[in-house]
Image 1 (cartoon, helix red, strand yellow):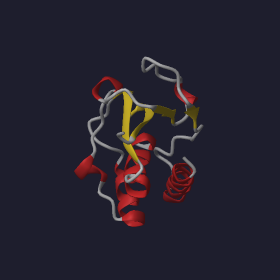
Image 2: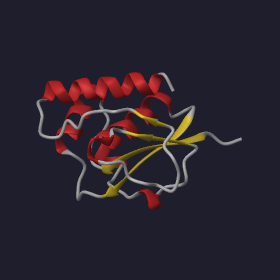
Image 3: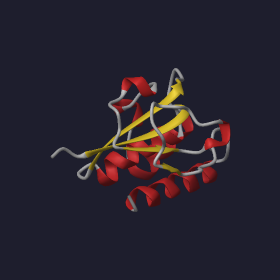
Length: 126
């Protein structure tokens, strides 16, 4: 039996969902397959997120990940929205959970670190 697929969904697949995908692979890649997607894409992953993930975990998200829409990933077993502050996208099925994370885009490094640590905690509790 294959690993369960977990997808992290945001409107823009550039920050929170990308961090969750990277941390998922890093922390629990042996247990699950992780994906992230959005309803809109950005030309690049949030550069603050990229920089801080390198500092904290030594992960280069730009090497292994890119911004993509939900139709470009397999249908997940578990779908998690990062936070519906901007209206939740519809991905063809209901979400299993909404993590309600605030978007750290444009905020301080400390704020980014808090969001990243919260995502890490949530992944460890999956």
